[in-house]
Structure formats: C-alpha cells, structure tokens
Image (tube, rainbow, N blue to C red; front, side):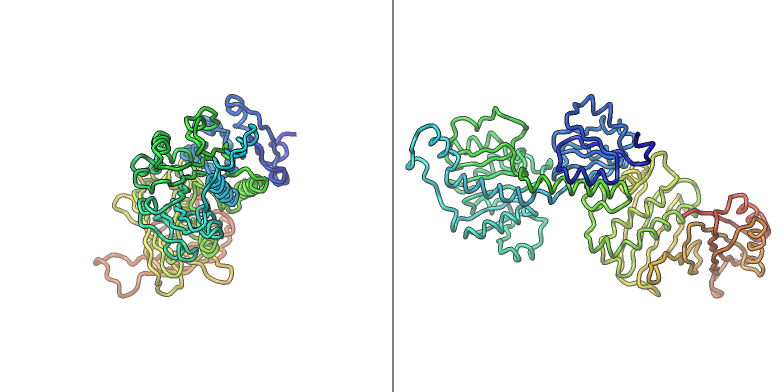
Length: 544
C-alpha cells in the first residue's frame, strides 16, 4: 500500500542512522531505507517523499531539490550542512534541520585524543614497534601540564575542549568575538582580543571555527609567522581552515613542531602531501563524530526534528528558520497566532494590491524577547494568498525580499493600557493601514484592538468581518438584519468610534468601524450588499 493510500507521509533514509532513529520515524510515517542511491537514482526517486534523512555523503544540490516536489524537511544527521543547498531549500519552503549537539562530546574528546597523541608520538611509536623496531629515545614527547592551549573558536565544542584540558593543568586562552565575556569567566578561560594574541601565547593550538568564506584559509602563512616556535596544531573542525601549503612550509621550517589533523580540504582522501615523510604529523580519517554514542544520538535527534517538521511541531534545530531560545519561544508562543492574524487583517485593509513595507512594533514585556519568530508570523499573514508558491515560516522572509517588501521592526518595553501590544502597519503606495492586537486571559486569546483608525476590543475567531460606516443610529441593526436574512449567526461584535473632540473637515461625517465574528465565513456578496446600502463606506470578510 502506498503512502498516498495510507495517508501517511513518506520519508527516505538515504544514509545509515541508528536503528532507534529509523523506528522513531516508522511510528509516524512510511519509511524507505536505501543507503545505496547514486545521484541519478536520487533524482528519480526524491519527488515521492515529504522528508529525507542524510548524513554527509548525499549531495542535495539545487537541481536535486528542484525535483523534490513534495519535500518538506531535510534532516541532516550531524552538524554541518555543507552538502545541502540551504538557499534552494529555503526558497522552496523546505526546512533544513541538523543535529548540532549530537557529536559535540565526541568531537571534543577526539581533539583531546589527538593533542595527547601528538604530544607523546603515540601513533608513530606504535607503527615503529609493529615494524620490529624498539625506538624509545626517538619518540620521547612533551607534557601538556602547564602548557598553554590556544582555542580559536569558542563555541560548544571549543568550550568542552577547554573543560577537559583544564583537568590536565593547562593554561587556557581563547578567541571568539561572538561569545560573552561572562562565559569566558565562568569557564576560567582567558579571553583574547584577537587570534593574533592566541598565536603569540599558545604551545598547542586547536581550531573550532565554522566553514565560511571568511574562515577559509584562516591559518595561512601570516598566521603561522605570528605563532610561537615549536607550536603544535590540532584541527578537528574543517579542512578548509588551514592553508595546506603554509602548514607544510611551517613544518619544514620547524616553526610548527607537529600537527594533528582529522579533516582535510576534500574527503575522502588518501593522497595528501603530509601523509608521507612527516613523523610529526598525526592523521585520522574524519573520526571526530565517529563514536557509537554520537551516531545513535545524531540519528535520534534528526528523526525527532523530521517528526516535528511533518507533524506541525517545533523544529528546534532548523538552520533556515530563526533559532529562538527555548525560553523566548515559550514566552512568545501565544503571540504567534495573533501576529499571523494581524498580518492577514492589515493586508486586507491596505488599499491596492501591492505592499511596499511592513512595519512591526512590539510594546511591553515581549519587546525584551527575541521577536524574530513573531515577525515571520506577521509575514506569513501578509503574504498568505498573495503568492504563487506556498508560504511558510521557512521561506516567508526570502519571498518578501524577492518581492521588494521591506520589513521594519521596532521595540519599546512599555505599553499603554495593556501589558503587551503588537502593532502591524502595511504601507502600500501612499496608503498606510495599522492594526493593533494583544493576547488576554489565561488562555492567551488573541484580541483585535484597532483597525481603520478605530479602537475596540474583540476576541478574534476564524471568521471576521470589518465594516466602516457613517456614525449614525441604526447601523448595527441593519448589519444584523442582513446577516439574519442570510442565516449568518453573529458570535460577537465591537464598535469603534472617532472621539467627539477629534477635529474633522467641515461637513465630513464622523466614521465608525464595526468588527464582527461569525460562526461561518461571510461571502463577498453579503459584504457587497451591506456596503451598497446608504451610509456604509467599506467592508472586508476575512478567514483567519
């Protein structure tokens, strides 16, 4: 029976992951495990799946993703996503999720293992002994005790390395401009102002940087020249971080006493300049994440993210949607539906069919949080029904950017009359339409507080009607009569009026606005019938 017949999504596991991860997927989906697909086979089959799980070998390039007509999530069982065209996936609205913490312990431990192997010449001594030679004097090493370990890149792995190196009595110094000074103090690590400062002090140097255009060739001839004589270099991060020619020259000159490498510019690789005739170089074939525990952890964590993406849950490790801290996500969660609904309402009220700018204001306690998730929700509402492609939280920002829609966000930690407020303004040509909302009550129900310049307070429901009319007696009753004639039941209603003291041009009638929620959607014909009657100016029927 096919996935279409069962009503279950289909997931392709294209590379080896833990059995527990596969079983987790099979509880919810129809799963095909096929680890032997070549590129042509993948191109042929990928269109049938809503989800795919890969490791590092499968290349999901733009042309492959283009064939993935049903794909909604890519799960990468590991940290890096170098083998995924994230931009192409984002444009198609496909979530790309990895398992960023699955192998951090394994990578940190392998870094320490290589450092010790390098200091004590362990692999060289073993090779010599197995070759029938007893060469104790040749392979005497150095202690790491009281030596200085320089760490360039002080993220999760770098911090774990520091914690473990401290147990050896090493002095620690690290450089990372994106880590707070407080975190350095907590771990007892000296914070360097530049990588140059680290180079000038380190006896051992370990790299833990991401692969970016800026970090490519980070250790080049200039960097090696700034290091202490006799430094030992360890790289378990990315092969591209080191200029191979510069490292070879530094080894030849004696500037670098030894190097330990787990990663290389291209992999797999068996023909590398430093593999031959360098007794002071220790190498392993990218084993940083290769522990039983890390492999199991990566498979399970990736499977969890795929399940979340395909069942409407929170994808906490997606690389192409805002990564919001758990505490912020919990605090702002009730505002997500409100923000999407405000985007829908603001767009419906905006004159014309184009949008030039979306301005979002956060007032009150929510302004202290990371509100990017809410801004994406507003964009979802603004763009809903106005684009050819399906819009979701992954591709909404890029779709807005492609359409030249500027998005502005401002925050103020105080709000008048309410604890929290969200204001959304859509600018279309010379027209500006602002709507305001908040959440109220123990269940955080979304409430509309302002539309068409009028203030009221109405709990939002799936079906909403907004009407603008002359502020004269009898208008509410006329709306009720029309709705009654069409067997439309009103759930709730609120009226906003211009203040009596507000100045208006001579002869201009004061306007009011009415917001009405109904049990069923109100057709445009009914709205047109109301607006055509005397005294009504405008009307909208919205499904939220």
